[in-house]
Figure 1: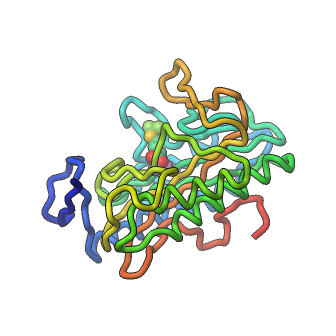
Figure 2: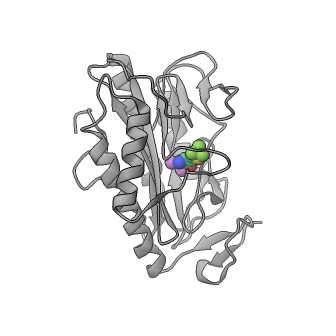
Figure 3: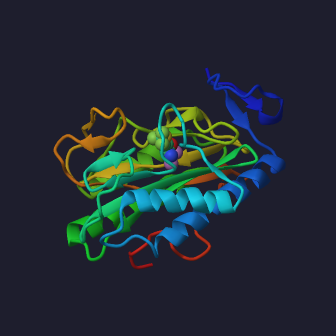
Amino acid sequence: MVTYLDAELAPLKNTGQIRLYGEEGFEAMRKACRLTATALDELAGIVKPGVTTNEIDRFVFEFGMDHGAVPATLNYRGYTKSSCTSINHVVCHGIPNDKPLREGEIVNIDVTYVIDGWHGDSSRMYPVGEIKRAAERLLEVTHECLMLGIAAVKPGARMGAIGEAIQKHAEAERCSVVRDFCGHGVGQLFHDAPNVLHYGRADEGAEMRKGMIFTIEPMINLGRAHVKVLSDGWTAVTRDRSLSAQYEHTVGVTDDGCEIFTLSLAGLDKPGLPG
Ligand code: MF3
Ligand code: CO
Ligand code: CO
């Protein structure tokens, strides 16, 4: 049985209970999430062939510092970078390094800024120069999966409605949904209850309530769903080395749906893609 609690009265640790935030929490999340979205906007002009993921990571760090924010991933469970940069068959948690990006690659950049203790978590895919049609299709499908998952969010629905919407679309497009990683409650904790599965059935999971805040971050593969984590302990890759994509938003449940806190104000939610 899941239980819910008032975020303002609850101790700051993940007890499995689902926090419900009020207007002050929503306002604090708007601020952190807006900065994350703005950094992801800026990155659209930075990602190109020849740029290294360490240069991207450096930008994320400096941009945060310049705006009073700390990257949540810095020193998180031994992670030492300000972002995750996941290229091609890397599913998530790719570690920035000194290798230049190459024309035709696709890279996910995942940023979480903390402002006044509140976490804004979002990621987008960036094409590096011209990419193949199959890659572009994967990015489109994955972004559609994210937005269909978000459209399933409303009080009274179950969390499984999000996963069902995502899985149905991905599989109808002959893609697969990664099972090993999920979205998560977020707020004054980086990773909190509930787990947000990107597959499943609409009658499963906890009931959504107004005031919940969580991420939706589907990882969709062109090939099979299976992943493995490399010996660095972080980098997750598709076992069949097929391309993988991910987009992530942080959302808050409202009276009749949800508010997307990490939307781009510059029209760059899908960098490098039409629309
Ligand atoms: N930002 C990722 C997420 O969406 C988590 C990255 S944790 C790290 O939940 F340690 F790998 F950076
Ligand atoms: Co997340
Ligand atoms: Co993230």
